[in-house]
Amino acid sequence: MKHTGGCLCGAIRFEVTGPFEGFFLCHCSRCRKDTGSSNAANLFSRASELRWLSGESQVTVYNLPETRHVRSFCAVCGSALPSLQTNGTLLVPAGSLDTDVPLRPQGHIFMDSRANWDEKLETLPKFGSFPA
Picture 1 (tube, helix red, strand yellow):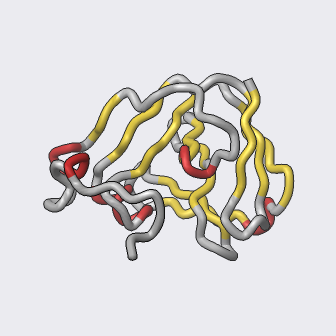
Picture 2 (cartoon, rainbow, N blue to C red):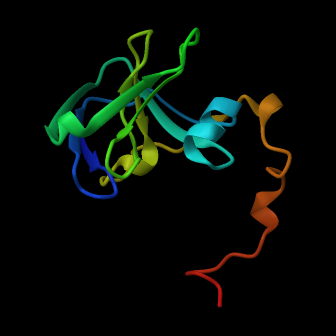
Picture 3 (cartoon, rainbow, N blue to C red):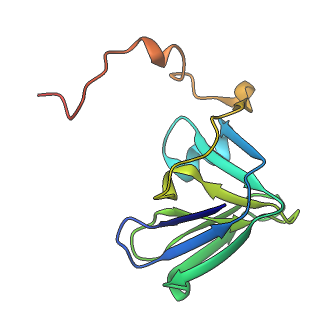
């Protein structure tokens, strides 16, 4: 299985070859800070390989000191990118892929630290584009 993706500005392109073993929506405070949102939608794999197709020199990696938290992002536009975690697991932000994600999220993790406004979001009105 092969997936491609990249950043918002197009400076970076990548390819992931192999299966994803996990797909979780993480609500920890670190992932909320990373995304500026209620959660991060991350795919996980120990068997897949990451190959940078272009722009690898624009990839910035941030390791939060004294933690296992690693974040990769585009130095130009700030888009989240795949990163190799300290335990050898490849983490791929689901939104960075251009190809369809082959599995559905398996669950929400770190719900004990979710944002206080992250509740019953499915009940909010839904719009096809920016509301007028």
